[in-house]
Image: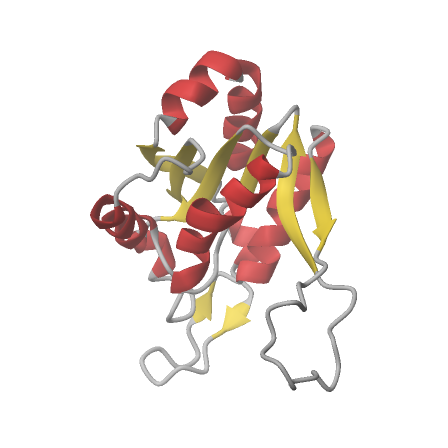
Length: 195
């Protein structure tokens, strides 16, 4: 099988994310671009579709893609950052006692280096917007990052994955219609495809 590397297919600047990354982290942006170009997508076409619309078709596995990205980011000294969640209990109504409070809960950013956070997302529709509109802001408020990068597939690549995987074009539509809030973190959004 011919090796197929990943490539950058689109760039979107949310809340001046591209400008901020270019000005403050040009060397780390170069590392991110190198990681993307190093991922061999042929190693990740491992999932046999059981979906009615494409039975038996070989698809790109989100889990395998994440493993490949993780391996390449780790080689360059990027690491995850995990924060524990202590859920508030003072907002329960009087007389309510939860049967069991969840312990050990956490939030995690995929990769962080010098306060630049990176999320690689091959998941369902809600996760991309959550990453940019909530997670990036939370991690900035907790002083782990100042700016973020979100790496997502474009539609052409998502079409070769399980149904329900969100994609760059849809994500940008959501962000454009949502607009920018004064609490939003600058995020550079990179759409990727198979070369």
